[in-house]
Length: 432
Image (cartoon, rainbow, N blue to C red; front, side, top):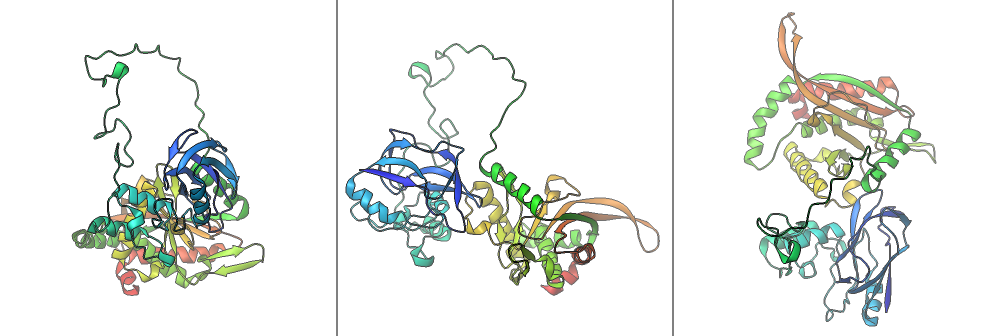
């Protein structure tokens, strides 16, 4: 029987996706839960597992193609009873697969997102033997990592290189050279091809996350009336305070950067000036004031900029924020963030200082109405109250806001509020 696999409903308002990469090709045998393809939505890059085992007949959509939900992407030849069971098992959210029948002697199928399945493979955990603690028995990332620590589930046997390790990488079997040799010194090799003329240009396809970023930036600029204001904060006291606290945080296994302090200062400002923690509903002509503080943090990854969200940041301590920033940043670079962790932000922060930048004109993370960028901290001579030249630590601050919602004076007062909290960390601590 031929199983026609279509792009599933990934939830969270996702209506289409781009086929970034196929992991299978026609004629190849696939197992259940084997990754078929990487799909880039406007929310995240997700890996879609196969709901059936069988042989790939046809790949219907080439890489780089954007298709709507429900489009048939691949045909897989499988057993009739398995195809019938997997039809009921293919329903899910964020690429998760639901169901109980699997063609493996009635073995239970785990309900889990693609990122969780990928993490399970990396840790050698059989996800179908993990008891899920999420809604409806969903297996969460924490469930998988707990199973790996306790060893309560049977590991998945795997041949070949470790997950994420390419053939020829350290620790992987060396690929054979010509005539079955390993390519070691002294073995025969094919003559090297003649060097090709150097090209004058190179074309790189705008695809995947880069394409999504481009579309979002253009949409944001064409939708909002964006204005950027700039200021400087004398963070000399904050530098000293953080230096003292960093050692204690390190003893607890947490890297304390300046970003948790900036988040706390921003939240203080958002409470005082609530129209920056908002969005504009153009269709209804309404400003939507947010009553919760979900702070997005821009993270640079090899694939492009992603913005994971720290939910209810106002309810978390500096150490809790530091720990979550560290975890989200690492998972963003490993591409293991879930769709939910990239949504729902009410205000965004971008720390260009970590790359050596000073001032910036950041683009709004639409539909939010404001974004704050902080630059690197530099040591400069300044005049004190007695006109003496003293060394101080200064940090640049840039605020882009939607002028349709916010006036310049209101936005500037917010920025001064944030600057004053950064300049007086003891007052910031009292507000925690």
